[in-house]
Image (cartoon, rainbow, N blue to C red; front, side, top):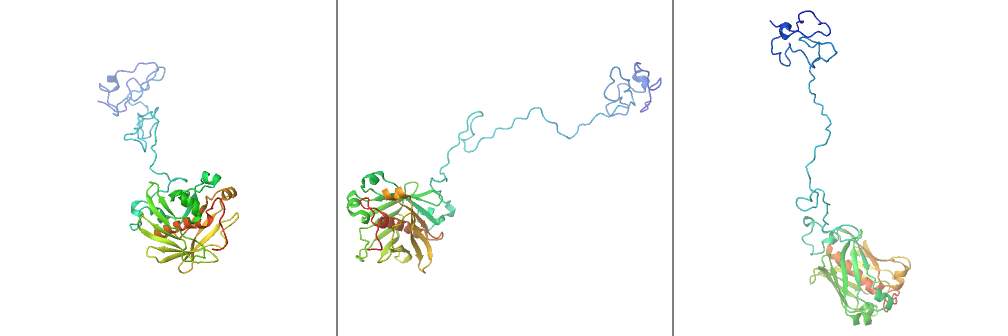
Length: 348
């Protein structure tokens, strides 16, 4: 009969160097009991030169159980391949250089201003004027014409319209014939084409031939603004004045919305010339300022720089009309005739 933890026959512990008795003499039947059975002799087996305990009932420690602690792997498992963004379908093959596709439109300084998302656009806004809905300031830079600067030969004016961050909003180009530019000078009649970044004409300006002097009150300067071309959205009308220049900004129905008043003398050294914009109630709501562009540029060219400020919530049509007023002011007061300044005090 098997007795758990019974000492082997012949005494305990056995003499050093003695061979262990057979299982039959240990009270253990053959084959030996399975792992975990009380009669199992223990683990690991005895080592040469060490006391040969490990019989049934020995004092060996229990077999170590696996723990939940994770052991570091000698090599990391390979991760599944993930395609890179902005790549063709499936991405490049492993080991191949990654080519990032350029975006459709950049938003950095000097690039074109991004269009507002379709869900944020005003459905009543004329097409192409969506750029004006989110800005309250425009910068107008006239391009320097080398032929005009060195010879005095009058060329068609070109402008770049930017926002306050330096991003392009529009490009404007004067449309006039050579004879009109040379003989009529700043008073010349012209059309101006204003296009967006896709070269689509979004605003068209028309200035007929007229005089700006106060001696001819019936033939003062006007400019019509259409957006899109063919649809009148407003106009600029010069008001008769002797001391300082005055203009009326009118909507499509001919009603005056804003008024512009300039200084007595539009000539300034090392400073800006400001034309203040007022509402119908007489409150100042913005300005059109001719900015000082440096002594060399002011002396040898008529390529001017302007800033336009208006309320953010102003109707985009009136914002476009104010842009046209900026071009009219440039021709009337800051455009040279035969490479000579034509500035004079008042409206004489």
